[in-house]
Image (cartoon, rainbow, N blue to C red; front, top):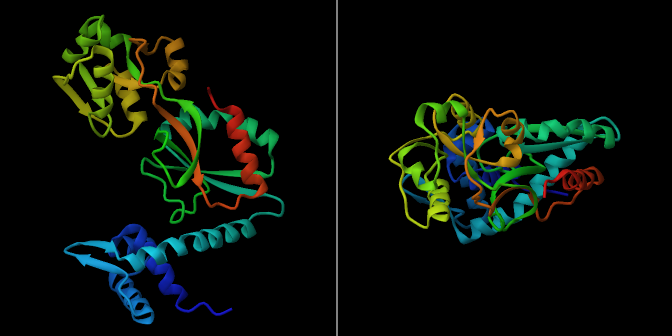
Length: 292
C-alpha cells in the first residue's frame, strides 16, 4: 500500500493542531521553514490551500479541516500500535493526563488497588495544567475538570464531585478574624484560579448579589493555591472530597455549606477510540473507585 507524502501529512496534522508553524516545528524538532516547505508540497500535491495565513495567525480552510478530521484517528492508532509493540507481551501501557493536585490528593493513592486487580496494566502519568491533546501527546485518557458537556468530542465519566466551597487555614482566621457570613468574604484575601469566575459564581450563589473582592491574587496550580492557604495567605475555593484528610486533621477549615456543585472531575477519552481489553478494564476500574 502506497501512502504518498506521509511526512507532509504528519507535518500538516501537527500544524493543524497547533495552528502555529513555530510551535509545530518545536513539536517535530525541525525548523519553521521545514514546516512551511512540507505544507507547500502537500498543498501543491492536493491542488488546494489547507491554511489561511492571517497576519501572525493560521486558520484551516474548509478542505484543510476536512483533511485534519480524517487524519487524526489514523495517526492516533499508529501511535497506539507502536506503544503496544514496545511493551512486554501481555502488558499494556496507559498514558493518563491529569492535573498534579488530583493526582497527589486522590489518584496515586488508588494505584495499589489497580496493580493488584490488573497487573498487566502499566500506568504512565502525564501531569499538566493544559487541556489534553490526545493525538499530539499520545494520551489514552485524561482526568479533566469542568462541567458536563464541556467536551462534546470526548466520552466522559464523572468520577469526583467538585462541590467548590471556601476553605482557609485556622491561622488565617486567627490573624484576620472569624468569617461568619458569605458577605464578609468581600473584605478578605481571595485566592483565584486563572480568573475570577469561580469566586464570582460562588459569591452570587451564597449572597444573591454581584460581589467583587477587595483583595486577592491568582494562582493557576491548585497545589500551589493549597500551599498558600496552609500558610495563611488567604481563602480559596476547594473540593471537600479531595481535602477531607486536611479538614479532618484541622489543617484547613471549611467555612460554609454552600457549594458550586456543577463542577466535577471526569475521566475523558476520544469518542472514536478503539479500546483494547486493558483500556476497557481501566475504565471499569476508574468507575469502581469513583466518588459519588
